[in-house]
Image 1: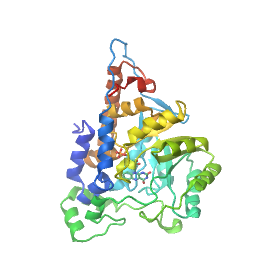
Image 2: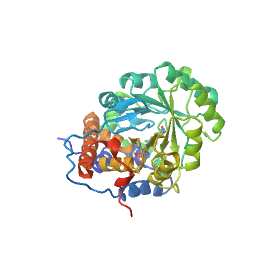
Image 3: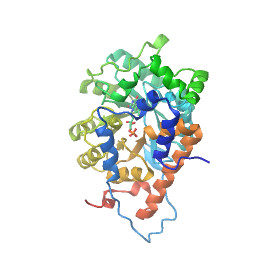
Length: 370
Ligand SMILES: Cc1cc2nc3c(=O)[nH]c(=O)nc-3n(C[C@H](O)[C@H](O)[C@H](O)COP(=O)(O)O)c2cc1C
């Protein structure tokens, strides 16, 4: 029997199992964590109007996303070094994506190569690009993604500089690990994680090394600008999603230049502690871009009801981040499946309470005004 009945359960169990350094890498946020906390609080403050007697026996949680049918109403956010949560995390995420036909975001900083991930995900993978500061090496990654069959490229634009995350700094988090006395103590106090990591091998930045050169996680990407995005748009034949947008003006400009979808996100509060709650930005951006333009959302979703709330505010699809890593750290692949089921059930029950049969029909009119 799983002990995961909520996202908080997954986080609590993961906190026991993971070395402090790894837990703080995943759980941490920019500055004092205000943006991260506000993301969650603002989502949870949204009240939805229950409706009764609508015959909601048959409910549909599948949604169309950029021309593909996703069997779950949420996908997997791109996250760097997922295998830190558990040595097989990437392959479990890819298996989840394949089974439920949802996209798994494959980070530039993934711990499994982009070629392997799309294979494991049976095509249900989107490649997430971090501009490296050097256009040639970014283009080389784009070419690899294209050659290995990716149809959707996600360009993350909210990391001109990596956010200052004090919890990582205090633990001396670095890739590859810096093995000083405090890390050795940390690892020895978390033997289950340490032994499995020792057996399976230390996670690597698998898209780099050898012929592909090096990747510096904290390198500046501040040189990226609108002309770079335009060049990527012109050269990428598939769907192009821009992730990490919080401004109405930026979203409108992306819509005008033919970006297929904007992902409203504050990187889970990991970049700017004074950022506004991402869900509030979603509301403003939806109003500005109109009802037909695809908007995706992540940052602070912690339940199936939260997922429904984001659809009510204006998302066409949403992505989960930290809770999935915690579920795997807590209970491995079974934990991931269990949390996926919890989220789906919670969303389905919420639909029933709201008197709607289909998640795509959830809308702003269901939000109870403050
Ligand atoms: C450990 C970790 C690593 C991340 N790495 C990346 C990354 O490589 N690329 C990216 O676009 N976003 C990355 N993100 C941000 C997520 O894609 C997503 O925006 C965020 O986690 C969503 O918020 P949530 O964790 O509150 O669900 C990372 C997030 C976490 C927690």
